[in-house]
Length: 391
Image (tube, rainbow, N blue to C red; front, side):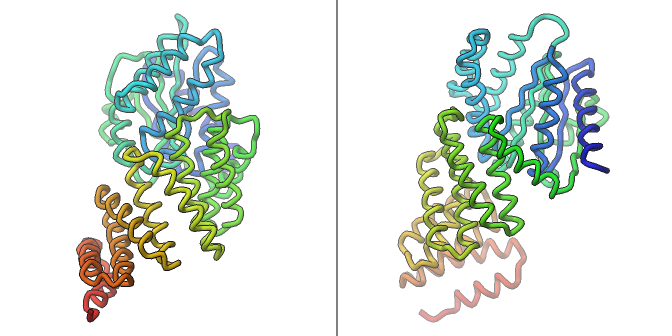
């Protein structure tokens, strides 16, 4: 099936969903690289449905709280200077400033837009399009909350989900829920990568969308081994995130830059530029520091673990140990067995090099317990050899 045919089919599905006589949800499962096509289809729906409000909220989801702050913050900024929408903009800013959970803040945004619709046949299409999902528990909780039945007859909810790791409970779909639908959007990777690159480099698009597109493109280029191109894309994401035009809240800037800095570090190291890679990773770690306890555990584990390994290679052992301890705590918090095994193995190696024999064995023992759950004989043998070292 050609790309044009798939896009036309997607346009028709979105149109049919909008025109269904009752409220409901459309779950679009697709890989990260296909998000740009979904956003393009939503733009077409908006153009062809002037009587309705089509509201796509797109950003990387390092955490649900950061996703809401980023997308709703950009929305509030766009309405702030519009005299016809001053009251709506104020309601959205109030929702953003509240201390309620992120899914309840989204509820307030939905209610504000529904309340601003004129009488008659006008509908709100709210599309949540996380370009990357790193906060699996938070995403599931948000979706569960949004799919609870409630009287919102003019709302059409679109949720982008991963194809491999579903965040939508099966109980919300199927014959018992005829208002809700699932669409699997499977499109050729190479074509999608080109679309994402085009979106990132389109200056007419909002800076927040371009920053997320550059971030997505950069990680895709890392997967494909195009590390120099990835550095350029991720550097653009870093810069765009902090521009005044993006008008992102400080936490959203820090999360996006932390993810960009992580990718920059990985790309530079793959190019044998260890020193530059460490500098990028240190910058990413500094962005985590700006977030403090609000930094998502998955991001803390990945950045701190990657930086700790890089510092170990450069023999900066005390700094490596400090970073690995941060990553270890986050991995334990996540109950991510693979991360626990990898980080505690590295932590033991660092401590052994520092002459901390007992502490090294304690870390390796923790890693071994995690590896037992993974049923990985090769890793078990490697850890057993470490534990049997004389010292």
